[in-house]
Amino acid sequence: MTENNATLRLWRDISPAPEPLTLPSEYSPHVLTTGGGVIGLVTAWVLLDKGYRVTIVAKEWASFGKAQRLTSQISGALWEYPPAVCGQHTDSISLRHSKIWAMTSYYIWDDIASSSELSKASGVRMKGVNFFFPSLIEEIPEQLFKMREITISGVRGFKRDPTLIQQRGVSPFYGAVDAYEHLAPIIDTDQAMSWLKDLVEHKGARLITKSIQGDLFLQEDHLRSEYNVDVIVNATGHGGIELASDKTCYPIRGGLIRVINDGKDFPKIDHALAITADAAGSMNEIVFIVPRNDNILLLGGIAEPYESTLDYTLDTPIIKRMRERCERFYPPLKNARIDPDYPLAQGLRPFRQSNVRIERELRFHQELFRGGLIMRPSRIVHSYGHGGAGWSLSFGCANDVLRLVEEALLDVVPKPMGLEDDQVLPEKISFPQVMAKL
Image (cartoon, rainbow, N blue to C red; front, side, top):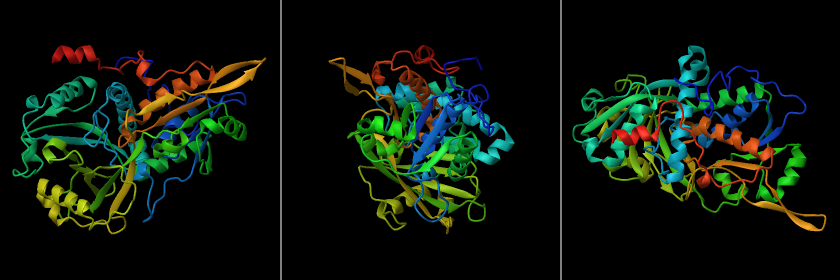
């Protein structure tokens, strides 16, 4: 792989070792990060290894029981090249950035998985992922374009092969005609969240369990004084609706059935299986089958925009349809046993009506100075609206947050994401190459 200083690399820029790559001093800038999910923890990791002092404030952290878990924990956590099967990010700004973010994250998760010790500790594995289509890919222009991008992106193990339909035991009555597979990070989220939390603590992050309420901008100076910080990073997911005063945020409710994957009731599945929304018949009800590392298989998936009540049960009609759909797709699942300890994971994916927001606060503070009015830039950096793609985009987004934090410290005038024109695609992929192949 070629060297590219614009992207984030494991060991060069960040390290999974317990000490930070760059030790902070008492004069190092101090960053307050809000949010204890994957975006908040990965962002804190990147900042810590760059020599920043970091305090993380979150209303809750990863938990491990029968009670409701963090959204980051109940995620399918299957890395996907954008736009994802379960994603809603199809606007041009999100796609232009998310392809960079996703590949940056791919390389780092891949490097973590390549070490047996790190893979075991973090719950990150590289596994085969199979995507199935209702017609030849050449007949689906957007899927053809995506496939061709994947082939030159650096994603490992790509193979287009319609015989995967038979090899993986997909029902011939489901309608799959074409297929491809590649290697991708599949993450045991419970284990990974625990590992990330321990890692940032060892690197020196101060963790505070507290709920911050209200618009961060309106209380920015107070918060900076209270926590003695120079910059605030908002990584609160759906909390953006309040903390960023962003009324375009909305939840997309989802659920995953957990079944035992020990090889006793059906052949053990060690690869992910997904069928596109157009083949499933609905953008909101798809087939999404993903193995965990602890003999658990996740069955999905569904997406219910603007639904915010977590009241699913195994008998909820949409959940019953989800299981029936997976069983029609892969008939041996009819014999599957439900996980008795945690049968149904459910959560709210944090979306926005426009794009994923990795952006500095665009509002200015007004101050009187020598009889005149001056406009002072905010030192808040936002990272939210990732929806169901937080694990796939995490490190790439954190790299952009790092750059924005550096700008904020200099009080550079912020600019909206749509005006950025200096993005560099990581390592191998470039859009002129893609267009040349079409």
